[in-house]
Structures are given as C-alpha cells and as structure tokens.
Length: 253
Ligand code: NAD
Image 1 (cartoon, rainbow, N blue to C red):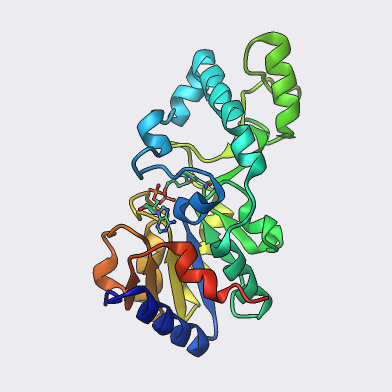
Image 2 (image 1 turned 180 degrees about the vertical axis):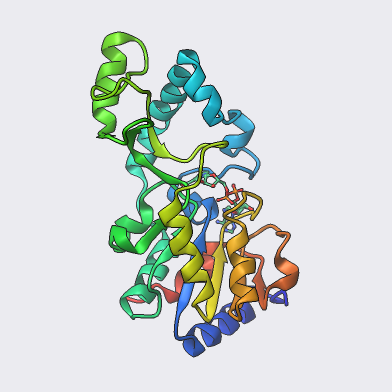
C-alpha cells in the first residue's frame, strides 16, 4: 500500500514501529544523500559520472588500481565531512530503545557507526570505504598510508606483507560477497517482525533479496524511497518521499 501523503505515511509507520518487537532496517545510498554523499542512480549520482571498476579489472591492471584510488582520494573531503543525518539518527534512537538489534546496510560510508551503532551491530554487505585491505592476506591499512605511498611512488601500493594489491575495504562488482555478513543479514531478515528498506533502488543483488526474504518469513515490509522499486508491490507500506522528512519525527532527543 502506498501512503497517500507524507503525514499519513509517518503515522502508519509510527503504528507499525510501536507494534513491532524486532525491527531490522536495511539501508542504501539514499539515507546518506542528506549528508552530502551522492547516491549511485539519482541524476548526478556517482554512476552517471564514473563507470564502476569491476573487481577483475582492479586485480588485473595497475592502471585500473591507480584510477580507482584517484577517485577515492577525490571523494575523501566528501566522506570526511559527512555527519549522520536524520535517517541515521532515527535508526540509532530505535536501536537505543531496544527495538533494532542491528542494521543491514549496503552503504560503505561508516555513518551508522558514527550515529551510535557499535560496529558489531552494523552488517556491512558491501564493506567500508574508510579504510583499506590487502585483497590477498586481508591486512588492514589506513587511507593515509595508501595516500602517502601513492604520492611517493605515483602508483597504487601493494601489500607490504604479501605484495598483493591494496583496495578500499569495499565489495566491488564481481567480488565475492562477505560470508559472515551474508549469514548475519539472512538471520536478521528471517527473525524480525518489521523490516524497513530505506533509500535503496533495490536493484543490486544479492543485497536486494533481503526485503523479500523478510516478507516471505512473515515480517511486515516497509519501503521508504522517493522513487518506485520493484518490490513496492509486496510491501505493506510504501512511503515514496524524502527519507529525512519521513524519519525525522523518530529521531527523539
Ligand atoms: P542507489 O543509488 O541504487 O539507490 C538510492 C535510492 O535512494 C534511489 O532510488 C534514490 O531515488 C533514493 N534516494 C536518494 N536520496 C533520497 C532521499 N533523500 N529520500 C528518499 N529517497 C532517496 O543505491 P543503493 O540501492 O544503495 O545501491 C548502490 C550501491 O552503491 C550500494 O550497494 C552501495 O554499496 C554503493 N553506494 C554507497 C554509498 C554510501 O555509502 N553512501 C553511496 C553511493 C553508492
């Protein structure tokens, strides 16, 4: 059911939140646009500016790694300045109230952690761009280290332990999904009574399978997104409006 207007949507969402015991939010890039981080698919989004570099290409080509890191450094002022928005803060308030055990996110921006979720309670399906990892041995690196090496050598550095490429700790197209996170997201989706998909076009799979999974396991499904999604038909409530306006009333004090 699509909410006829924002006010009735917020009211109905409030009733569903009050009635729910276990709420699992599932977030996409739309929750962070208020914070100055562009999404992928809106006009002017990252997709329209840069073709994503698939994992195979990153591994095979030094040039692709250099380009990938140049793009990441260019985004650093944006990521560094971003603070949690009303959507993040509303979910953190529900977490503090004991209703939200954890958040499943496709985002890589660390803003759920910055809003008060402990890292253990953020299931990052696509990793995290605020640090780097060796694709071979998994050794972590700070972005500052990568930048210093890049500036000194004029090229993206390799791991000092095993000499494999160092990449942001994110999951690229063509890269295997993280097993532990997929398992946790599955458990959360199967054991909640309210699942809220927020700011995702629901076109990136397998992540987009979780709203449907929750619905099939008996949860009520809410979709908050300003554009239609392919799963609107199965949702109990669709709020096709701004996330910040919709979740603002749930931020609390
Ligand atoms: P997407 O770009 O495909 O979809 C975002 C959706 O949010 C769009 O449908 C858009 O209409 C909607 N939206 C944007 N701002 C909104 C607002 N204020 N209110 C209501 N709706 C709003 O994003 P996705 O589904 O998350 O998939 C993109 C992939 O790219 C993700 O897997 C993620 O890893 C990555 N990504 C992450 C970030 C981030 O971490 N902030 C940013 C861009 C891309």
